Length: 330
Image (cartoon, rainbow, N blue to C red; front, side, top):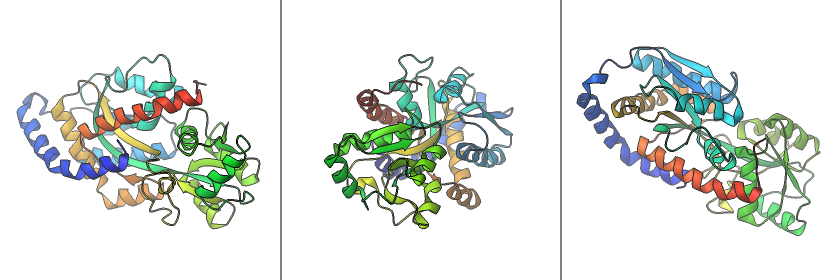
């Protein structure tokens, strides 16, 4: 299911979610005392990055709403699998949550032959919280101004153009492979140890193209040091409203860094409903929304059921792309 379609359906579920929350909270009095201790929000990335900023902003507002501390626990490693495994095996009492980057978890399901947890079975979806778009950019020396130009050039010289990403198997890498799949091109992937080195090499002209986070590219686009080819999101971004989406040329193309909150499978439904309601409330705070927009995030929300459907759709989307690209864990 396309993320944009999921969002269109989300508004109709808000009233249902609110009713379900009230009903669940009154139906299960055994959990009326929850939360009775600090909540741990596990983040699969190191402190200081955009994901950490997102987690701490959400944690601060959620703490005020629930009346208990929300402690951020950074657990980077194994392509987010370390953090995911930790949460999947935690008690299902509502006191441990996971900031899931949905695309990464979906890619991992296809990329790793054996994992110690299952992304669908071992988590209870709570809600979407935010998304961040990517942008395909080119060095100004490349004779292209838009995606149509790039596709024509790439088809005329298959295997001659290169694009950099933050590493093999990342959403940035697979975003480029999805472009190859949908456009019928053969642009060669060059993996880097992070997005910053890839960005530096396209700025220096060592590679022609790179898939990078939208915020990191904006200053270079304004100064003319990069040519924007297209946004990976389904809709144009408020950060770069003049940059077209890739989907405007290739309908159905969509890659976003979509973040969600999930809990261990078996977490009581009344607790999930309370978290869903309080997280939606937290994300409506104008100060938090402005802070997140400054980091390149756009606020999202959903019902638990919509999030569950979206996770399964992302797994189905990425499995054939991972197989076609022959991506293996590093």
